[in-house]
Length: 187
Image 1 (cartoon, helix red, strand yellow):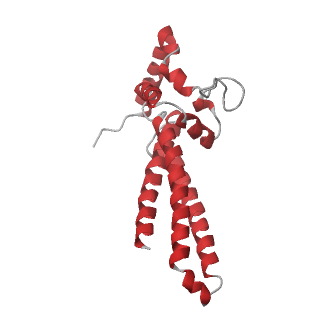
Image 2: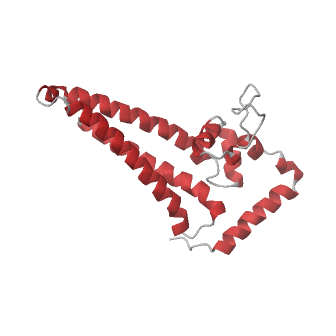
Image 3: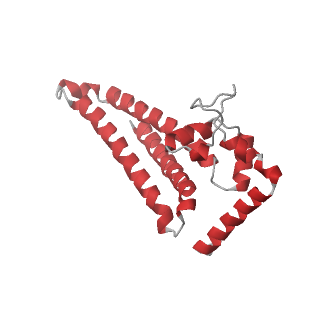
């Protein structure tokens, strides 16, 4: 088991990285800056305000969509500078789409499998629809709350928490995807 790193050591590591990036002009225009850009291939940004930084986007879904547009090469360059700073956002964007698709597939398969139940209970299929929607909403709230607190329970600083939170969300979403696939195959 790795030895825990103190908050001071993490701060100093982050400070050293910041000094390194700021002190070396060649790194200032590095692939990390390109990764953080929100401009589309046509040169315009998603917000219409020119190039921006994916990490400064206030809302998580916008950040995920921004990173999802980046090439794998740009993301690798970003990850070399700061692990878990970019890739989990792109992967989470993709996983969230897969999760939504699986939820729709589960609902369709459940409705198909239990259509005959509606003959005796008219609300049976609507109860399935409501129940699955509520389960998804509740699960997402649990995932997000769990992942928001997780870095702090590990003694991380606020600066580090965002990237770790996104990696946690990805991990729990991937587990949920496996769970839904198993449920779908059992119907």
